[in-house]
Length: 346
Image (cartoon, rainbow, N blue to C red; front, side):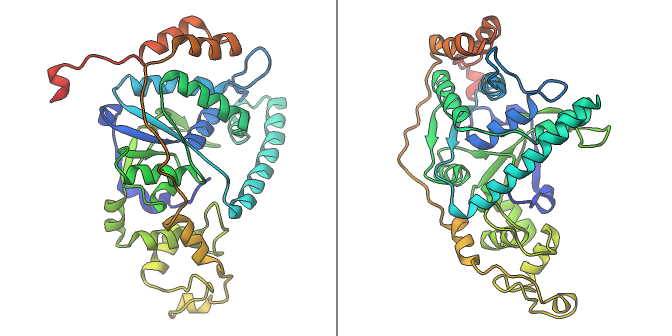
């Protein structure tokens, strides 16, 4: 889900095509991108792709076919996966499970009623990234020659740290949490370009890659990164519920003008904030700040890109999961390194 600061960050999004990322390295939030693959790569009624044994393969399809288009553009990828969840996140994970179970019931009802559009929408909300999917994904990434890093805790925190250390140009995630973790650049919509149907509306929007530069966004908003973290905490993160009544725009104003004490939730100014001062505060706000400002990360990783192990890729996808050999072979051609010309170098 991530922190909902999109409304105040959107003005600082810069649209691109994939050529913008040519010769750049992107550090991918593995769990987040797998969730995107599982949500979007589905049949018309919302059923995920599956092999003959009934095992879901949407995530493997995304890793092969969507990554192949990125790698073909001379963009390097590094995948980072979550480690042990932070204790404060367990409640969020439980709430997500509850929402998914509700969506599963609504999905089944929509299929029964023949409403395929609603069925697919509800189905995308049921996606779960399991341990088995993560392990299968790691094996496939390794076979494709894409390096994998295991984070000690939050994958986005580790990815952000790696970008801060110039291991990569940007973090790749659909969520904005990387900015709170200090990522200098966030890249979105890298693997889900094209037309996207708006939920519950017969309308489509064009999705294209975009980047957000943290320093530019902070300057434009007139805040520090620490204040951005406080805005996130005030509206709610994966680790807390936030304070009732605050969305991103109101939180931005409150933090900039120091109208609220984050710990008590009480207005410290005058007018409307003073009238509504009896709010539930965030007693563990320092602990929450520390999650974002001083995350647990590691330098214990080695980054090496290799040519695909064709035999291993075929074994995983074709032998184990019934993928088309011809389609896999065609996709693998995009992973092969291309010879650079003098024009490329300049």
